[in-house]
Amino acid sequence: MSLFQGLHISGSALTANRLRMDVISSNIANANTTRARMVNGAWEPYRAKQVVMTPIETQSFSSILDTAMGKGTNIEGVKVSAIIEDQSDFKLVYDPEHPDANAEGYVQLPNVDLLKEIVNLMSATRTYEANVTALNAAKAMYMKALEIGK
Image (tube, rainbow, N blue to C red; front, side):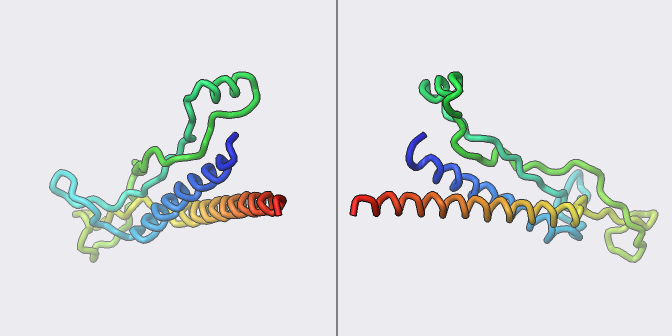
């Protein structure tokens, strides 16, 4: 493990969780958007989006050998591999006065679950804070190591 690998791991997690918080914020902001995009000539409500994260793995010979021998891991962080749309059904709400109501008086609302989004936002925030703490601890250790030579 290199000297800066811990900083790289925390930095990649900070970047990924920042994007995750942005996507969650977009979901919350569009929780009532009934006209997000045109599909087959008709407006479709906003679809909730989810962030998919995967580990960043090195493929060097030494990292694979170390992993095989049980001496370490070849994971060097996390990356966002995709932002996917939730394909679950839209919520139907009876509101015949709404301009987007269908012939029966029902309006399709986005498939955003606000409670779930708030919990995901709290989780992403806590993960972000934990990585900031790890980054600061590594920085403090490096500073103390530099003071040894004084």
